Length: 161
Image 1 (cartoon, rainbow, N blue to C red):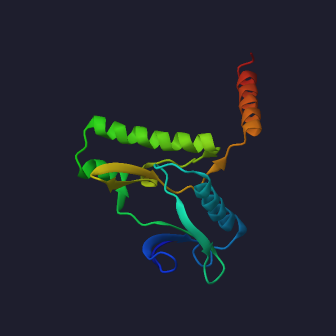
Image 2 (tube, one colour):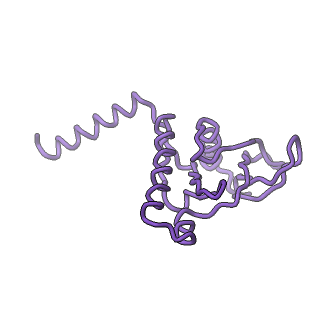
């Protein structure tokens, strides 16, 4: 669940607060939120939304806060601003740079789609922000290489090469 909340300690500001819906506390749901929180802390890129604080709710569910910005999904931003093909491609390239940063950090998002890319306006310029890292996969180099070899072996066996 995502809420708009007021941070009142240290700094007063409006934030988005993500936590688990009451009643949805199975271990795998908690683990997913914990993974997303850890992922956001690991990455540092202007094209990726990041957590500004984390903690637990009064009922003990994990949560994290992100800065609240006026954002819209990337497709809506393109349509509302009547962006040209070139401008849309420029936004897409910025998203690709954010995804590449994730890969270089060892994170594979696994759910990049238009609803997981929001656009904020900074100084009259569109700035895409990739969100929803709850379905990430940590890429461990040794394991990734083994997976590639296994996939190649399956392909070769299928073609009897």
